[in-house]
Length: 412
Ligand code: SAM
Ligand code: TMP
Ligand code: ZN
Image (cartoon, rainbow, N blue to C red; front, side, top):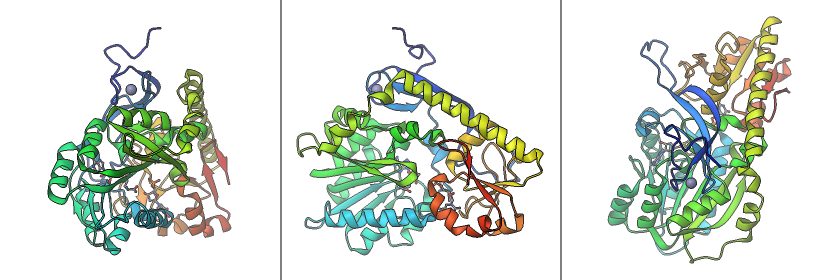
C-alpha cells in the first residue's frame, strides 16, 4: 500500500523515523500563545498546523514543527496557577509524591516545565530537595518568588548531564503538560537516562488521544502540543530508549489526560492498567476512526459558524471566555474575528489588554464582563467549565447563556 505522506512533503516520525500519515490539516495558524500588543504592526508568524499518525509506532504528532524559542520565551503568558482546580490538582500530586516516590533518605525531584512553581512549591515547603527546569524566565521568576529552585533552561540531554553532575541522581522526574510539547523526545529520554536514579521513576501527564478523539476536542491540537500520546505509543517510545511503561492513570483535568509512570526496563512489574488500556486503543490508529474525527471537526466548525452568524443577525452580543491556547485553533480554523466574538475575557495579567493571535479579538479582564452585558459567552476554557461557571454565576443569573462547542455545539 502506498502511503500518501512518505513523499518529500511528508515527515518521518519524531520517535521512530517511520512514515507519518496526515489525517487533518487546519491550514495556516498563528502561535497559540502569541498575544499581540495592539500597537504592534510587525507581520504575524504563521505555520501549517496539521496532524498525523505514525504507521509504525502509532505516535500521533504534528506534521510541521515550530522552533521552540518562538513559543517558549521569557514572556510566555501561560500561568499554571490561574485555575483553583489545577492548583488543587498539583498540590494533591505533590502530596502523593511526598508519600510514595520521595520517601528515601534525602530524596531529589526534578520537574520539567515547572512553570510558575504550582507543583514544586508544595515539595519545597516540605523541605525536599528539588529543581524545576523551565525555559521561560517570567514564570520561572514567579516560581522563585514562591521559594522554588529553578534552572532557566530547556530540559534536554546536555542539561540533564549537568544536573546529575552537580546534584546527583533524581528519584523522581516529573512533567505535566510538557513532554507532549517537546518534539526532540530522544534527547528527553537520553536526559532521563542520565539523570534518573537506578530505581527512580519518570512520571508525566498529558492530554490523551483517546479523549481527544472520543470527545471531539480537536482544539487540543495547536503549535505547542506536538505529540498526542496513548498507552501504546508511549510504551513503544519508552522501550526504544531502554525504559518500560509500568503504570497509567486516567486524570480528569484538561478534558482528559493520562499520567504515565516509566521505570528502567525490567525494574518494576507493570500494573494491569497498562495492558488493559492498551487493549482498547487499536481503534485510535484506524483510518476509519481518524476520518470520523476529521468529519467531526468540520461539523463543529459549520455548527459554530452557523450559530454565531444567526446570533449576530438577531443583534445578540456574543463574547468569549478564556483566552486559551486551544481557542486559537477554533478561531483561526473557522475564521472567527471580532465581528462575531467581540471580546474575550481572561484573568491572566499577561494576556489582558492584548489581541488574540490571528483573530485579533481583544482580551479584557473578567471584571469588565458585567459592563459588556453579553447575551452569550463562548466558553473557550471548556476544561475549566465548572470553576468558571461558578465564578461567573451572575452572568447566567441575569439571562446570559454559555456556548460550548465540544463534543458538539450546544448552549447551556
Ligand atoms: N507544568 C505546568 C502545568 O501543567 O500547568 C506548565 C505547563 S505549560 C503548558 C508547558 C511548559 O513547558 C511551559 O512552561 C514551557 O516553558 C515548558 N517547556 C517547554 N519545553 C520545555 C523543555 N524542553 N524543558 C522544560 N520545560 C519546557
Ligand atoms: P488552559 O485551558 O490552557 O488551562 O487555559 C485557561 C485560560 O483560561 C487561561 O488563560 C486562564 C483563563 N481562566 C480564566 O480567565 N478564569 C478562570 O477562572 C480560569 C480557571 C481560567
Ligand atoms: Zn513512529
